Amino acid sequence: MSDKINPAAETAPARELSAEIEAQVPFCDLDPLGVVWHGNYYKYFELARTELMRSIGFDVEEMRDSGYVWPVAESSCRYVSPLRYGMRVICRAVLLETEHRLKIAYRITEKDGGRLLAKGQTLQVAVKPGTWEMFFVSPEPLLARVRAALEKRN
Image (cartoon, one colour):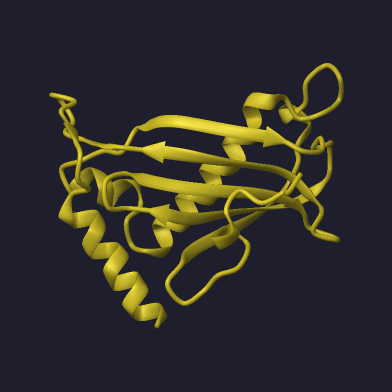
């Protein structure tokens, strides 16, 4: 079985946007078995996603100021090997899709050696706060930031 979510998520070609965070697993993330509780993996995904969006100039405040919010509509995580107390890990977020939704892939790897520990995805959709009207095409404020970040990268 391949440990790839998407071949594009393995490297960072010129037309790909990605970001990563480094973290040390704290005691408070553990379950009674001494490994990171399954729900806490999403916390690492969130930290990497926030860094990715910050890197394109579209952090939480900019999203809110744009008149739209992007709640998570779907999420998945494959637990390959347990995270344990004190481990130093890297969580990488890769922007896969923006045209109709915000699709991001994640990989959590051990900092030393790069061993894959978990991988996952989130899918977010644009909605108007207040009415929660969903948009089936990503609003221009997001698309403009993605275009600008890609141009800057090239």
